[in-house]
Length: 289
Image (cartoon, rainbow, N blue to C red; front, side):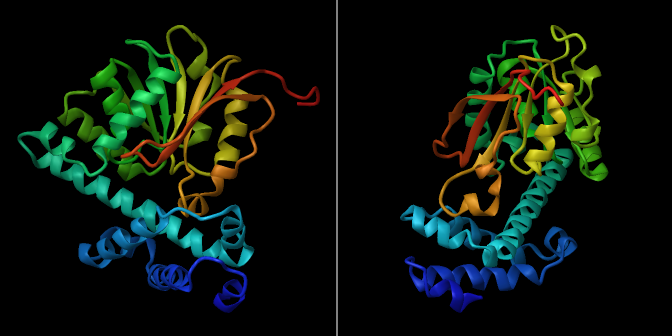
């Protein structure tokens, strides 16, 4: 597989060797090992991966060459590893918050805290929210930072939806420790847990819905939401478009289901890596749907 790609590749062989070197290390690790093995075993690999995938691609041709079928399992394993490392990091900080007498100080030391401040500010403005509105957030994780920042900085209440029961329960404990349980609730579920009932009174219930970068597959999620959210409802989803990151998560190449209008796309500004895509349900569906 390596030799096939190298024949056409314009990028340096060193970069390709780095990619396959990381792939060899990562594919041997089970999900449980990534989540629970000694920290130094995964941290070094995570830092290498983070440095690699944020490099810029030099041309569209470079992207096309990396985006070959032979490379799909390579980037799929890298995406799995990165997502699980994020869960591990959030879990560690959640437990530190629960053990601390100064939980807010611990929270604000979180590695990506500043990233979330930037992301939430963008979403607050472009979803056209106002204090006392309520949002739903799909893929809230063990440390629901998006919801925490929305409430603390903007007075926006929220409902988090997390499919892993243990992570959902941990996040509930964290919210209680931070004194935010009245403004934020978390339920154990996935996109199929979102129903029309969540939007019955559009003036009082969820005003908007945000989809986490790790919530996948985006196409399936958006197809379901189209059936349950009201016309005119706004939502946003986060993707990675910088350098090789877009190859870890091909949702950046997503074709929108008919019935949505993309009204804005905000590219990442350091320290954030995420592009935020803003959609509105138009109601313009095919007659047979």
